[in-house]
Length: 59
Image (cartoon, rainbow, N blue to C red; front, side):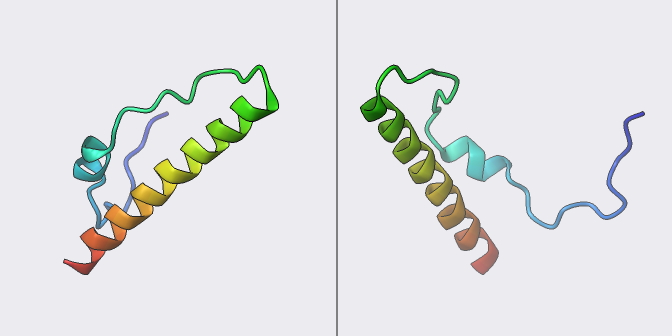
């Protein structure tokens, strides 16, 4: 059963996500170095989301 939230979200994430670069997180690391680079990419992506969300909240 699919339901809608009782209280709709106050923040629309569509513009935030649309501005971010498309990242492919569906990949497999073959070396420790590749794994660390993938972790760094994910960290940067999440950090960028947090910054954009903070800007949106401050408006």
